[in-house]
Length: 274
Length: 288
Image (tube, rainbow over all chains, first blue to last red; front, top):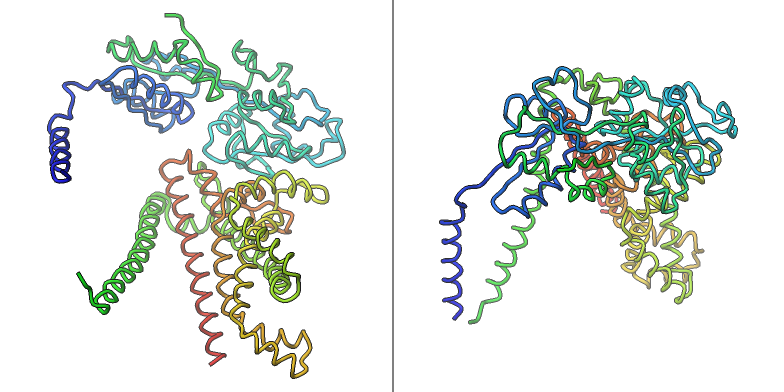
């Protein structure tokens, strides 16, 4: 009995080895920004489940790799975590989501709004006490992000800073850590993804999202395109997109079906009606 | 079928020897892999630039490891220095002084603390310890917070190891010391302490290893600024924290730089183990 079972197993293995390769596997290659990659990874998994025989390979390596690969035809889509620039010209951009950064402080902090120039001075160490901002006579605890994070990249680019110019008193990794640190320290100031900050504040975390240059930091303002410290996440491809699989996948990424996945990852989805 | 006992012994010997060599070779492979992955850093940047760097800005091409090695060493050794005397006091109390009911409760608590995940310690550090230190010295996330937290993490293991080592002391030796009219302090100094020396050495090496390797809890309380601290209230970054903070998005030479940090950690840990082994050997030499 046991012996025949073993033989069956062996036969089954041999069969799958011989006949495993499906008649034709359709492949898509997507490369680029590590900010966009998690979105595409999740959506690719969903799409592969719905369409048997389709394989979507998502590789991160920075926005510039996304552009280069799409231009050379190495990838069907490039992912970029910024708006299109003139240099990208032969490529067409397909916005899939928006991403914003909120400046956050502890809930007990009297500050409600802040100017971009002030934020820059605080992070450069030129303003060192909350007293200078009509607060308590306590030092400001500046929380910065670890090198390589896209939030840091956007923050630096927006304020025209280099990371070595920032005088931080603590460095953290992900958004949740930054929020926890601000929760525990009434003197702290940090910048985190708006989606994460808004949802944490909504469930009662003692943090406050500061208005930046007069615009409240909220998903709604990012969606409306009014919040300044934000950017569009794009897919790029040589136009026109001819491959039918690529067209279908692009429609899927910008469909209502994909919306909850993008929201789950704390980005603002951009839905394009089919 | 009947196996002769000598054959069983020999097979068992092979298994044990095999397991020993397997773990040694796994360690060797890890070291080799980590060293191999850090090679691109030196091919692209060069030895002199890496060791002469004045700061850590990997995306701007500056790779300075000194402050992080120092951060790891200071926090781990500081933690051990705090934990050793407390562990000694606790373990002596457990074994010699306190009532059986109290001892039972404390041993249970210590056992529980040994198994507590480090993230729990870290979260406690972040919401309690750091704000507390922040009251007298901003920003709170500091070398001191890391030392206190790591000290708290290694204390239970250390206490239990010492506690167990007393069980090996011949009870009659202690009684004889009493009978000879030695007072309590002298009994400890002449009878108890000499016996705990090997256990203390082992407890210190294990604790140092744990403290050097701890990552999540340290990230939450140490502040992670790459700098040589001038006081215990300054934030520091340890080698482990550096890897965990930056690995997720690192590419090319940045990634290689993080692997070199891991290599330094392996070297540091090996030094601790060799140091522990040497002091233990020296200790045995004194006894013999």
